[in-house]
Image (tube, rainbow, N blue to C red; front, side, top):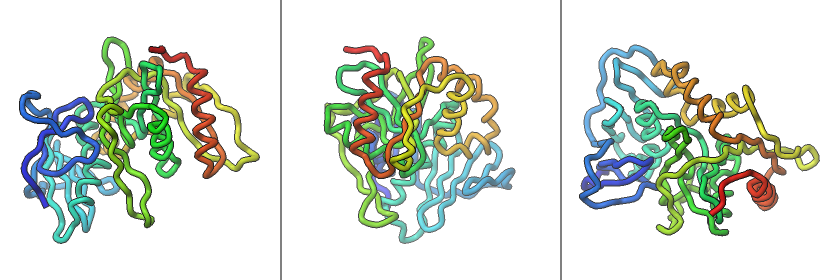
Length: 292
């Protein structure tokens, strides 16, 4: 189930892990001390202070228990222990580590995690974030944009931070997932090194939604409370800051991100990814992003 320890770069951090991390970039020694260490071991916790969905909090520790796959225990903001269930598939354990385990740690570190794909379009120097619910087409659109020369910051989640009054974004840029042959299967697609971006300033958040063709509206820029609400609705794994009791404390930082960025809502005809790409590219052309 576990292999030798491997160093990765992901979310702008160095990660030392006994489990594969799809999308992170494997690196060799010499990149400095890891900020996150992921090991295999016992995930027993003390008395549960609070339970919320699949999460349990005990003191400063946070446990995610997914029967049949694994238990993920975040002991601190820089340490996670994983205990796979018997007969669990290694790919499933790693996929859930990327989907939920790592975002747990990022929230615990005080970051804001956005449920979005991040890309830098050809000819621009700032990234865009494609936000929206699962299944809306973020990864499929990212695949199309990569084929046309975009570069990838991350597929499903972006870590946002503030540096010099700018919003910076980072993610797992080395691969992305697309729906597979079955309802539960997800296929991993590698991204060439030249199309990977580890860390970049974020210029815009575009919230995707699908509608019936006859009801699709024009793109609209959101401001003030509407932008803040869209941002909060598209947090990744929002139960984590809730169970940690940190949601209110994150509001001022979220508001700063909204001031730093432009936020748009973009509708496209249900199931028509070609039209979605066309509408998205037209919108990006109209957004005043710095050009290279």
